[in-house]
Image (cartoon, rainbow, N blue to C red):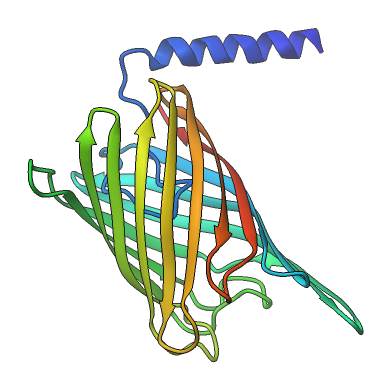
Length: 255
């Protein structure tokens, strides 16, 4: 046990030394707002985490793991690969339903469009495709799903920034052949070189059914320049929204 502790301590110290002088890792989690930042050319970044969502007294959803691999293809363009392992529990009078399995595989890209100016935000465009029949039967989509978003970032000062997303989603799921609008707005505050906090309002506006508005807040902690831990939690604000949700995550930028 002592040897394991020493090894972990040495790796941590080496990581701290290696991270000195480098720009701190920038991630798209744990908020729902995607940033305008694109991964540098030939660099790989992994963003992974766990989430729990209490929909109501009868339904709980768990994301045991959600991972996004981000790779800098060329200047201002990154590629993405997303994997998920999901679970849902439904309590019924006649018995419980408990399903676990992989969600659909996602692929996509982020394209940086313009730098921030004094009067205009930085802009990027993100596209995500949900591959049909690539997940477990309980969670897969039968048709191709898409998520298109315009991302904006604007710095208020050295320690505070605003972000916003506008987008449209087609899930590709059976009986959901309509567009779902998406919006988000987030404020991010840097407390020091390692700790950031954020507060966010976001929502889904389906072509059919009721709108789903949510509040989210949390923090990120930079262990070193290439390693970040995160935590977030939030509440539903609409009748159809989940009661509450929580997530924990880890992001690593490969050297």
